[in-house]
Image (cartoon, rainbow, N blue to C red; front, top):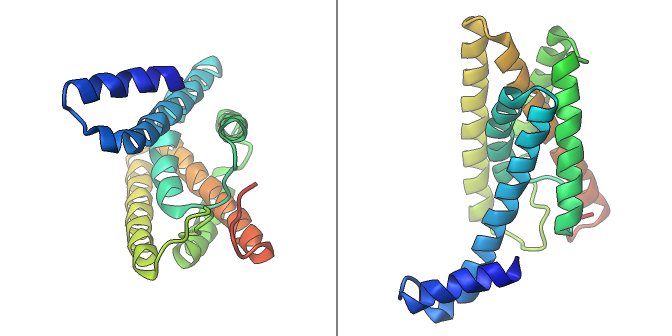
Length: 195
């Protein structure tokens, strides 16, 4: 993958699309896009294999914004992250496919998790410390996304699509779990919560 990224960036420099001095920054960004995109494609493929591609897409649309803005536990290696994401996706699809948690229980759990998230997110679990201003900005954005997702969940529920609402609830609960684990790791290690 490194060779492909270098090839692409060399062409961009040759065509004066980017400055050679910025190549490293673009390399990082392009690598993140490829890794994240590949991860999402694998998750959707797993959704197809388990006959739930729509559920996986709705889950990703709900989970990813919360995850990006809310933080939580993170893996220190890309392979570990990929494996953990894949396992998490399979768990989510099994929960969704077999409704392993009743809708009533999921509503109560989601309400409790939402209160927890509102109070505790974001959790900075990276080696890069963020400033108070950045923290407050991420918190505001996270709360906006959380509110919007709950509004969408309620609209789908009222429209008779409780199946979509259920997927959004599962996404919220999963992010709540990752944030709770992240906070737990933060309590044990003040520097970071990376496994």
